[in-house]
Amino acid sequence: MRPTMKDVASAAGVALKTVSRVVNGEPGVRPATADRVRAAIDRLGYSRNESARVLRRGRTSTVGLVIEDVADPFYAGLGRAVESVAAAHDCLLLSASSSEDPARERELVRAFCARRVDGLIVVPAGADHSYLRPELDAGTPAVFVDRPPGPGLDVDTVLADNAGGAALATRHLLAHGHRRIAFLGDQPTIFTAARRLHGYRAALGRLYDERLVSMRAPTLDSVREALDRMLALDRPPTALFTGNGRLTVTALRVLAGRPAALVGFDDFELADLLRPAVTVVAQDPARMGRVAAELLFRRLSGDDGPAEHPVLPVALVLRGSGELPP
Image 1: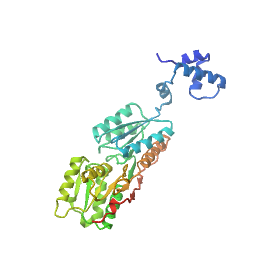
Image 2: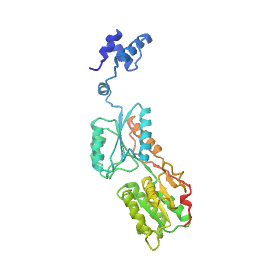
Image 3: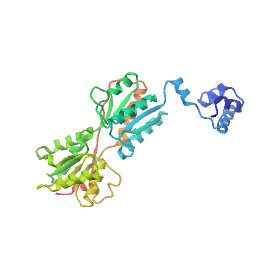
Image 4: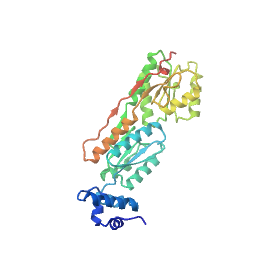
């Protein structure tokens, strides 16, 4: 049996209320008595019953985070920032991966809500979030991050300037003399992939050629097939724009050290150590996570103003690969 507060009171020779005050950090206990209670707690291995505390407070001091993949460096950075903000508010973060599966996303959100999390931060995998309406109506705030919710749900949403960043990368390659610029993007149903395609296409204008575009999951086989097809054209691409970090790394594997004019969306580890070093459009996942978490805790503190939709800037980091001539 786990030791109880009564066991601590008996071991310390004090009243139950005295133990309660020490455990909950309340005033009114003499220092010597408090020390005796803490010594009994350590000796018995007592820990506070958080379930009972939750029932009294009406809050669980937990927030739920649903992301695409905890192993992805982008989402790892985002999640770490959310965790830091949660810790500053004395809250525990529960996080899980949807693996880009809308059904899994719904399952995770419902599981978190069943555990009575105080709030949610969601990187959506699906486009229908009507299932969240009962939770929102019941007072559970939610913030969407990296991608917006589906139609009919107006909640706080934190995005990056995906289209603007893609246009910036494409114009940079154009400025270095390239006119045949290929684009490798993720699946077109993913919001960020679609917005980056939009920015790339807008920057190219009349130079846009759909034969230089591939929108598929970032696997080694899909990237190799796309690049082989493009390089076999009568007018092959002279430059490549990759739509996320995984696509950039996979493309570099396929190119196997062959110099190529390349700009990638998302920075990644060791990008500056390659030769040539990789020019990227850099997001700030930590800032994105921090802004989303701060929005959530503002709602938990009683802010009931209109939904906010901040769009965070991106930056072009010049390193060499994006500056190679045709």
